[in-house]
Image (cartoon, rainbow, N blue to C red):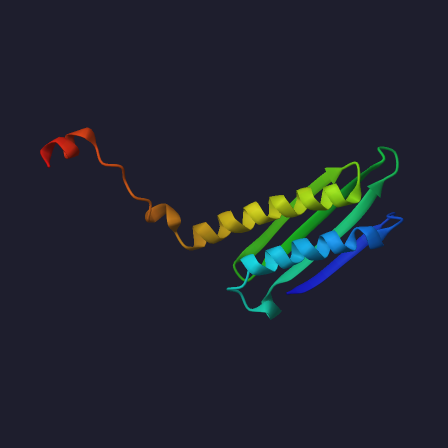
Length: 117
């Protein structure tokens, strides 16, 4: 997976990088079925000076579509965690749609069907 993370107005990106790497590894596990050269992850941290909060935008380009998530919090690590957790949920939902899990959902037996057997 190709990754690119940019920082805007963030003073200490070295404290954020280990957390971001851990989340990228988790997403890499979810995206094992794709060719690593075709998957691109772009993220950007930005500190809002007037609100004193951090915003993290992340997007993943897959062969089957592009997913985008955002996270905003008082510190950079929490904003990254929120953004990546939202992205993980989107990836899981996207893959379940590709597998057509909605067609394979088992129907509950009705009371009339149980009485006949």
